[in-house]
Amino acid sequence: MKDWQANKLMPGAIIPKSGTAREYKTGGWRSKAPKWNEEKCKQCLICWISCPEGAILVKDGKVRGIDMDYCKGCGICATECPFDVIKMVEG
Amino acid sequence: MKIMSKKRIVATTGNGAVAEAMRQINPDILSIYPITPQTAIVEGFSKFAANGLVDTECVTVESEHSSMSNCIGASAAGARVMTATSSQGLALMHEMLYIASGMRLPIAMFNVNRALSAPINIHCDHSDSMGARDTSWIQLYSEDAQEAYDNTIQAIRIAENRKVLLPVMVNMDGFIISHGIQKAEFIEDEKVKNFVGEREPFMPLLDIDNPVTYGPFDGLGGFFMEHKKNQADAMERAKSVILEVADEFAKISGRKYGFFEEYMLDDAEVAIVTLNSSAGTTRHVVDELRAKGVPVGLLKLRVFRPFPAEELVNALKHLKAVAVLDRALSFGSVGPLFSEVKATLFDLEVRPKVINFIYGLGGREYTLQDAKRAFDVLMDVAKTGKVKKTFDYLGLKEVEVLT
Image (cartoon, rainbow over all chains, first blue to last red; front, side, top):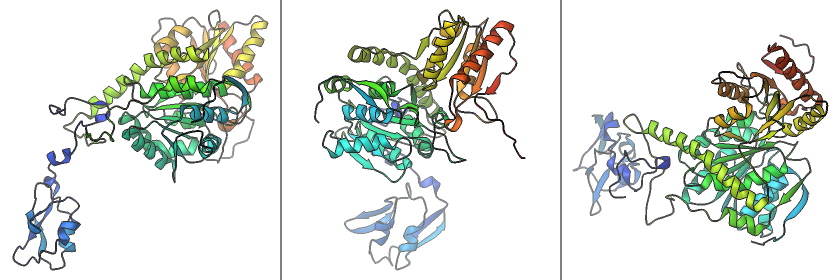
């Protein structure tokens, strides 16, 4: 079903593949955005564990940024950060 | 599972007959939550499970909402799924009924018809299943234990048919049939096993080599309306599947089913249209009146969803007057079966007069006298060509209502 398109309807609206949420960018839902201070970050990864969207980008065990395509701006990372290096700002 | 290889004629309650059908079907999953008058079905089945007569996993849940949710998950996973409920239980399932049908999941559920509170009442009427009329579930109705047993076995095949893929609800009257002991004939286990076969699930969730997504979002820019149209088309296709399954079932049982049963209808001038156990009482009165030369007949509807409109018109068009009996009431309007039958007959150039009787709410007995009264009114309408009252009640007590 590699050539499946949304207008080819399956019974019950089944999508004949998995992981399709990746194709639906939800960053546009955001009213506030997290601002991460890389210099002060202690790399505890608590934000990474806490983020319900998996929007904290981690590579080689270190936070590298926040994926704004999917961050919905819920602010959980800012609340959970023990070192106050994530702040919610407009955008 | 243990095989019983003989056809058996037994004395059984309606619930006992349904539990027996479920044992023979041997589903993968049974969702269990007790509610009167259905409880004896899952209780009976639990005994079969405890005695090792079935391979079914009985899942005891904390509510009917969870019961239907469990059915949905298990059916999407690819399992053959059954459950049973009544009244408030069906009402509590309500939102999940739409999910089951919208996701096109074959589930066979037995609903033992019971009134909805308030006031609290545990006895028969059809408010529960009629409340679920628009949920896109196929609805079959059963006059007695035999039909409840037969419909349960056929429900599996209808629901799982690739052209249909819709859940099926089988109904029978609470207490009158569910707890009344009647004669019924059980088919050999082997024949039922071969008849229901194995479920061949369509795109099941547990096929991990071909991962699929169930229950996605489909909003403004999407195809929600097209999916609903497809669902309606599947319901339409179910009509031919129901008849095909009935034909095949006749071969193993000797019992023939259609959308409805016509009794003394061909040469009748007036007839009663009804569901479930009241057909038995009505048939008796038809016999009595026929012996006196009164041209009365009966149409007992078996399939309410999909509604067999065209076939009903053909069966009723020659009549002078029809009374539709409703064991449920759409408050502020009329009986649900009546409004549909009447609307169906409207397109005829010359059509019978159609009247509505509400009867049997909360288990109020439907007596021979009630049926006689309905036929008296019908014969009067047929004679005069005039309807004095389109909407009336049968068996209503004389009371003073304080306002």
